Image (cartoon, rainbow, N blue to C red; front, side, top):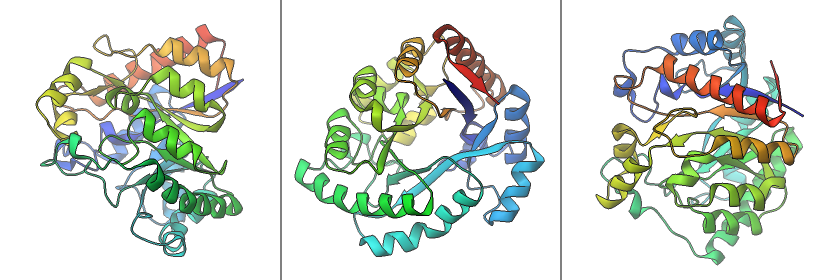
Length: 301
């Protein structure tokens, strides 16, 4: 069993809060990520948009494309319209050998609104999610026919946030819809981090290792703050940070037991004035190398 270790450039280049990382460049992000040892990076908005330009850009830094965010609009649009909307990104990711497209419904999310508390996020009924799931399965089946995997990203502030939401989505979608397993969003959302892994391990195609500072997330909940407020306040951090609250060794051991073979991606948006991107990204990388060795997981790349 082997995994690859990638990173999101969000610590250096935050797409939702660009002023927070204005002093950093995407070029610095990729250069430092590769220097640390990461073999892949998820696509950021400040990378080239055209396929050949992005291919050359990644080649310059000797780093692979290991996925990337896609803002879904399927609650508002029909299946044909959504397929047209995501078609260019799917074709690009196929051409560049990405393992998956990270898909999340954004038509009704509050995650990008700093004025809206995360508690005001949309909460759907099981029947509503089932209706959405039927459409999502059609989109995922089309992606699979193109050679791309749809990895659904449960996310704070969105309609698929907690354990119940994830259960309902997985129960009402076909196997073409796979799950992006994000430890930090699970913990912040109040889900059982290990329970979701045990229940839906056979549907997990992509993994994000993100830790949370429990005292910060608790305060954000108590003060009824937004997702972006939580980011600025330091809710998230990397694996290996003593201020974190997730047992990543337990997660790695379980991934080994289920023979997970794919990417483990560090994604931890922080204020770089408090958490130096390179230093914290190295902390996360070194911790993953250590726990993988203890779990008996080989690292490729």
